[in-house]
Length: 85
Image 1 (cartoon, rainbow, N blue to C red):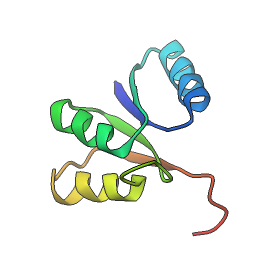
Image 2 (image 1 turned 180 degrees about the vertical axis):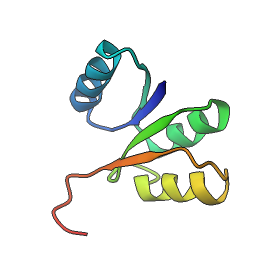
Image 3 (image 1 turned 30 degrees about the vertical axis):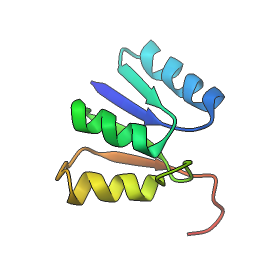
Image 4 (image 1 turned 60 degrees about the vertical axis):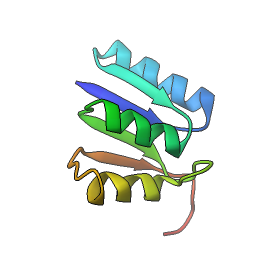
C-alpha cells in the first residue's frame, strides 16, 4: 500500500512516515497543498493523510480538487489541530 502524507510539521510527518514504513507501507511526504496536487496528479496512492491547515492550498482545497477535478476516490484521512468544526 502506498500512502501520501501531506503535513507541514516536519517532525510529525517524519514520525508518521517512520511508523507506517515500519509496518511495511510505502510512504511519500510533502509539506504544501500544491505539492500534494502535483504528487496525486503524477502518482496513484492508496491513502492520503492530509493536514487541514497547510500553507498555500489548504487541505480542504486539496481534498476538493481530488474529488471534483481529478475525480479520484482515494481514501483521505484528515488531520487537524483545530479545536472546532
